[in-house]
Structure formats: C-alpha cells, structure tokens
Image (cartoon, rainbow, N blue to C red; front, side, top):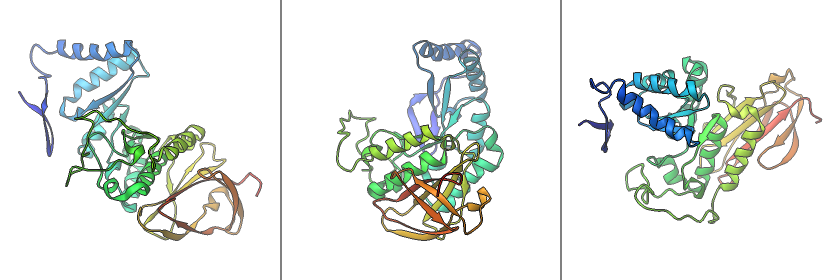
Length: 321
C-alpha cells in the first residue's frame, strides 16, 4: 500500500486509499462524503484537510461541490505546502481557504513580492490565503531565534496582511524550543499532553486580543486584496495600508522585521490618496495604543524598538485635526 508523501517527509502512518479502484467508484467517494456529512449534522462545518494534494483532485471537486450544495457555509481548508500550481489548483476545485508560504516569508522583499502576487495576478480571483504564524508541524526558524518581539512581529503581519490568520497552541506564550536543527517543536503535543499556564509572564495574549478586536471593527482588515505598500527608507521595516471599502479612512501598518535591534526611518504619509497636498495635516488614531495626534506634511519619521516593533494607525481626512 502506498503511503502519503510530502517531500522530504514520508507519512508512513497514513495509508492512502485507492480512489480509482474498480469497486471504489462511486461507493468509496460516497462513503467519504458521508463522513463529512455526519460531522456537519453534529454542528462541525469547518474541515482542515491534511495533504489534499496527495489525493486525486476529481474527488475533492466532487465531494466539496456535493457538500456545499447542501451546506453552503461549510469551509474546507487545504493544508497543502507544495508547488504554487498545485496549491492554486486545489483552490480552483473548491477549497475555501489555503495554507500559504507566509510561514517562511521573513524579509521585506519576500513579503512584498508574495502579497503582490496574491493581489495582482490570477490567484486573486480564486485563492483565499490563510496566514498561519506556526502549525503543529512547523516551528519556524524565525520564531526559534527572535524571542517575544518576533512573536509580536509575526502576529501583526499575519493579522493585518491577510483577511485570514491563525495561530497554533503555544504561540501566545512564545513557545519556541525546537528539535535541534529542525523546524519542529521539541515538546510537541502531538506526542504528549501539554498543560499550559495562559497567564505566564511574557505572553502576547493582549496583542492577539487587540488584533482580533481591530479585525472585527474594521472591514479593511478582513481582506488581503486591498493591501498597498508605501515608501519607508529602511529595508528592515515594512509599511503598508488597508483602505476602507468606502475610501473614507485607511489603516496604516508599520512593522519592524528586526526583533533584536531598534530600527528607524523616514516614511511617507499617503496624503495624495485623499487628494491632499504634501503639506496638509491629517488626523491620526493609534489603534494599538489608543491615543490620537496629527501628522503635518507628507514626510514623517519613526523609530521602532524590539519591545514595541509595530504601529497600527487609522487616518481619516474628514475628521478634526
């Protein structure tokens, strides 16, 4: 029997069924669909599908189509880290959300190029990217070496670049101990029961709570398609905007990609997006810190420290300055 493979890993504890055996169509397909329907009857409507690219695509297209015809609100997440063409094909055959390469995109150019691909090329029409900061199988190298600032950096990037983001247990507590030389957790709860103290010092639960609150409050943060990158004169700082659907205001996000050192730079306030001159003033609300102030003129300066490596602002030209 052939086991599932996702090079370089071999999942020898998982055996693929023969989807095209003579006695398996449509009986096997129907039986597998009925398992999904059984869970839906019990209130479960979100399904994370492990390695769907190692199974035949016609099955997924038939099964997802059949289930969603009955339950349009059912969600299927493709847990597939593979070549882009296959990841996009899975979206086309019906998967509502998809894992992405965000987990390994750490540098400014990598993040900018990836978001630009997702927002300006063909995938924007059918691919819904889910930005996971970590997974049960992936303990990213960046998090292994970045300390608490790195966890805050990745949380803000995931929560504000994509309309979908996720964290795996322990991220809130900045857990990062790896199996030496690997992107895997040393004390993985795949192999042992973990009892966690969610109030342990150094946790970033307040950051994640704030991010979830902002994502609920501002529709601009509920999609990746409106992301615009703006000029900031430092390659260790990334700076982008999320305009509101009606254009009345705009969320600005600035994140240091350096968890160890302070970074500073001049940056441009996109006054031109509201038809304002380069010398105009605009009201600013700091959404993370909860205070207001004014920017006067297009060019401003920022310094980001590891203990506060990001800023999230809202600018609105119609509000009092």
